[in-house]
Length: 112
Image (tube, rainbow, N blue to C red; front, top):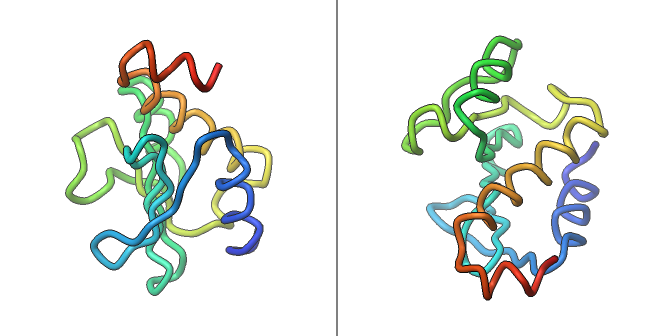
């Protein structure tokens, strides 16, 4: 998947907004980041995960603990080619789902 297709996909998810933070492109729901992308550094990006998913994901080449983000709760993926398009979409959806689950029930209800 190329960067523009990736961006379009992220923005197609209900309630998603984009913005720049720390010189990275961020995709957010209710101002909470679920994908952070280093567009000036080879399209490296990070997504939220559970500790169980963390072990599975980091066992793969090109995926490791995300720098400066909660330990075992965020992974950094080397570039958009590490995962195939289906896996990439599922990873983004899962990250969004985990972030949304931490928001108040009233806000969550807007996106169900």
